[in-house]
Image (cartoon, rainbow over all chains, first blue to last red; front, side, top):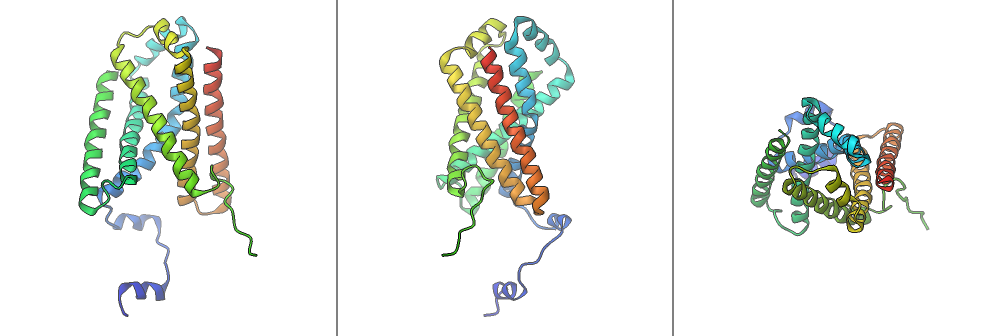
Length: 134
Length: 118
């Protein structure tokens, strides 16, 4: 048997360097998958922002109103938008994962469709969050 | 008998357990996010007293605490998976996992203290 698998077995696995990842073709479901990881990390790193919002919004009526003023600042809004974008993307892509656990969207063609739907829904949610903030 | 190598850094000490916890916690967090997003959309001019009253009802406090527990578990399983996948040198991986585990716990304690003081 002289197929590619036996060649691979003879050579053994080889390490590639980080930049050579770019020379591989990553299909849309793969891009959604890596973005799911990246968005999860972004949400985790921005969680202190949510904790601060929770704390200041509940502490007293005074801290609530000073928080309302603080949220009007463009920089705060941008940070919040980044957090909400990460959260909504992670949520949408997470639903895709749960559907895949149920056996939905696992074939080559349906995975493409599921990835596109994920992309469209998350973009709509991210734009919606931006509209809500501004 | 050969002693089995057991993973000691992942949350459930087993991949199947982590897999299940990751999905159950995801559903809890997702439900919380959707519920609160809906609440904010319905209450555009939300004031302090309305917001405070909502967050201090018993069902909401239980839901919030359940969500916080889920976030801590979900974040740790996710971060453990990512660091285990991408960081190969054992010492760098151990240090980053230690830092991330402490961050997760600090977030959780901070949030519980905020809820406790309300």
